[in-house]
Structures are given as C-alpha cells and as structure tokens.
Image (cartoon, rainbow, N blue to C red):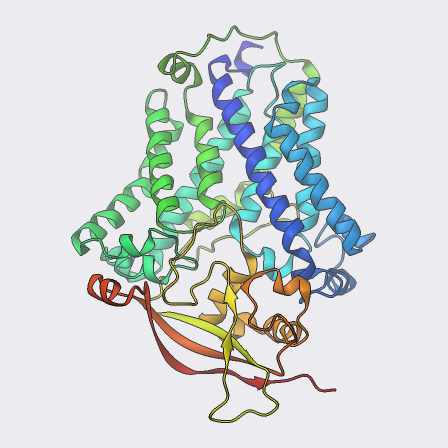
Length: 475
C-alpha cells in the first residue's frame, strides 16, 4: 500500500486542513450573523417561502424538513463551533473514522445553508468551499499519511479554479486581451479595499504588466501543478503570491483565501519543514483497507463528475461559477469575464418629513463595505462576506439584479427593522423610522492625488438619476 500515501505531504495537509477549517468558520459566522434579515422568517427572501416551491431533490437541505430562525441560528452556530474545534486540531485528536465524520458534518451543515441561500449565496466561492470540504473528508488525519489520490484531486480542483478563470477572461472582455482591464478594475470591482485607491493609481504600464502576469499565472502556471517536485511546489508558490496580491487589492470574500488553501496540496511539506527547521516526520502505519476503499470510491466519483466541468473548460460558450449537481461537487469556476468601465452606486436615503418636495432634507444610510460617503476610506472585510453590500454592487449595474430583494429592503428600512439595520453601518433614523425612503444612482470614481490632498475624499461622485422614487408604507 505504499502507493496510496505520501508521507512527505504531512505538513501540507496540516496547513490545508487547519486553514480550511478557518474558512468554514468564517462562512458559518457570516450565516449566523446575517441570515435573519436576508432569509429568515421575516427576511427579504424567506427560507420557508423558498422551500415551499423548490423540491428537496433540487436543493438538498435539512431546512426542507423544518425551519425556524432559532433552528437556523443553532445550525449555523453549531457549524461555527465545530469549525473552531477543527481549527484547533480536534480532527487530529480522534480516530480516523471520527475525523471523517467531523469533516462530513461540516460539509453537510454548510450545504444545507447554501442550498436555501438563494441570491445571497449565488457566488462561486460557496461551491468552492463545499467542493474543497468534500475532498477534505477523504484527506485523513494524524493517524495516517495523506492519500495521494486526494492530493491529486485537490490539485485538479485548483487547476480548474485558475485555468477556468484565465480562459473566461480571454474569451470575455477585450480589455483582457489588450491588457487594459486594470485601468478600470480596481475602481469598479464589487467591494474595494483600503489599498484599492493606491492600486488604481499605479502607472498604466504597470497595470498592463499586472494583466500579462495574471494571464501567465492562470493559463500557464497551473499546468505545473501536475509536474514532479520542485516544479509543482514552485507553481503553487506562484499561485499563492498572485492570490496575496489580489487580497491586498480588494475584498473578494474567501475566494482568494481558499485558493491559497488548495495550493498547499502541491507544496512539498517535507522540503517546507526543512526550510523552517521543523521536526522530521516518520511515515505512519499503512492506511486501513476500509479507508483505501472509500478514497478510491470518492476518486472515481470525482473523475466521473469531472466530465461536465472539463467539457465546459474547452467550450467556446464557457460558463463560470456553475454547479452541475445539487451537492456542489466538481463545479466550474471563473471571475470577471467582463470588467465595468464605470462604477455606479445605489445610495439609499430617508426622510422623516410628512411630505416630499424640492426642499426635502434627505439623510443617507451608511453601508459597512460598499462605497457611500466619499470621504470614507474603503475597509478590509474579506474573508468575511458582506452579502447585502455585494448585492448592492449588482443593483448598481442593473435594477434587474435587485428585483427580488430591493423592495423588501426598503420596506424593512421604513419600519426600522432591527435585523436589517444590523447589516448597515449607519442608521440616520435611530429614534423613529423614516416616513419615506428613496434611492439615487450615482457615478463614482476614485479621486486624483490632487483631489485627495485638497478635499480628503477618496471618491468623487456625480448624481446620474433617480433609482427608486420616494416610497412609504401604505397603512
């Protein structure tokens, strides 16, 4: 059974599993702290209404059998506690079968949330976390050396993430082909970070170098993951460096972090241990036959399911961030096939006046992550995911993206709904709810160095048009 395990990857597995548990922890915390306003019983897109018309086979979830806000909260906090325990090493302190059960429980807990999350969970990194989490079930623990087959499956997943993202760019927006996309991207990305202004103001020739380097990192480097060491480790290191650059330049939830996690499957743990003067690792006893059988069965399943995403990769009509099954196993990924040239932001305002006229005083609601106050430096939130803020970016692109939830959001602001207000940074009506709420569409751009020095503003905004006319509750 020597072919089955790779003892030299013990450190790689340790880092991968602990980091994956950390990402799970962030995902469960995001669910626990935001769900009531988004999809709770009185939320904008309630889970009970969703499960009433979507069958179990299309969206497997425990919430088909029972839902209450209290039950969802317990489910999410339970996942957070289990994630924290595994981050602390609980899975390495139990027998192999128990560790597999723990990883499988994390996967099932999060799957139940994603499958009823609707628009709020319609992001590629949700499927990426589930696919990675499924493979982690078969990665073993400290009782056995890492299975070679699962390490290769993790590399195959990382290859699809990177290569798929590279292909969707080349096939999509022309600015990727003429190396000009970063003239716009840092300014128009969904949620800029504290360094995004500075990235945007880098010289344009450097932006072109960035795009070219991105093409190399996503279209060439991933093939190195399947080559012998040290080439595979170098390829993984280049991917990690690229992802750290993206982390510094914006807020993309845990997409970049979990990509880094996957890259450790190609890092030579033995060489890394020597580099950092860590104690050596003696090969562990052979894996039990039942574990070998389960790993081989899981490998066969992934290989069969890989047909659909592999076909999608070579298709001229490539689709990104798509799941081919209800369990989010072996998906297709990609990001920014098109890049916006202009940033539009929906600014939500309210008034407590009894009638609306030209002289009405409107007060602006402040969001935690999305641009609002031009003088406020964008904050760093990733890997935490501010779901409402992300959807507000889509709303600025087109009202069609917000058709399901924007009206319910306004209704809850008109009642000072506590759960909804907790999603915001600033409520201009702390004493009593507003009488009217409206939305305005602004064009935002980063200020220049001179404007920043003179005004202290990071953004300059110009009113484009009315997005939603003043609305009030009908009593």
